[in-house]
Image (tube, rainbow, N blue to C red):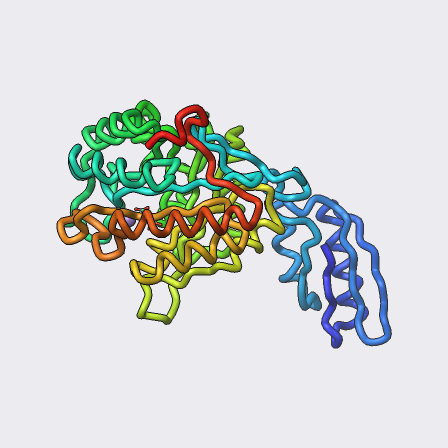
Length: 348
Ligand code: PEP
Ligand code: MN
């Protein structure tokens, strides 16, 4: 760490700073410039007391040298991580195309949506069985019955599945049916949940919290990695802002921003980020162009009857057009949609 000393700090204050640094078990190095003095502090930045240097009288600013996340950082692993969800490869040039309805509603809807998204090239099927709803009176999801449908339809169309887990008590159940666990925006900082999914061997889709910084997102990934689960895929899904013509504000810069700091794959969810089907295709294209490792899109064959997030669902034909665009873009960027089953991929 570097302590920047206030220009008006007295000599006695600087001596006190140096003594306090030593008392806390660190080694200080004082450097006096013409107008400012700084104190280099050598020692473990993760100790709880490290946060307190800013309150020593005379300290103006504390600059951390190390990143607070370690296992998630580029320094820890320079090569891009690759995460497998079933046979679908995410990262290292392979794009995840995650699609499906917001919620599993019944077998027929899941079946028809899955048929279309598979035909378009989706390689992971989504559908919520436990839904985080703002209102306790809104549809809360089908629970285990929904998980069964998702699994059955995923197997029918040879697509691995992802579904949300909201509570540590649901983990065992969801692990029995799904190939990937989603931690939703509202639970990005549910630290007990992060630790528990970190103990599983399922890949995790970790969505950015609606008021979380990129650093917060990487710190949450660190919780999962620290428990031994290396298979974390991050997801930018927009943050809250003053703009009220879109559901959230899509932070596209999060993609290269995360890539610069972390080896983990990151995908983008323009459905929840914009809440608007007219904006989703262009934001998917922008995501791939920005270097995202995939996109996450909600699709419904009959949005007016959807049990949740109907207004933001793409219709099947819109999804097919989007996938055709994304394929061309991916090719131009020397990347490709990951195949769920290389042997039968071409047979629709
Ligand atoms: C979802 O994927 O259906 C969902 C609720 O997303 P988010 O957590 O990003 O709001
Ligand atoms: Mn949704």
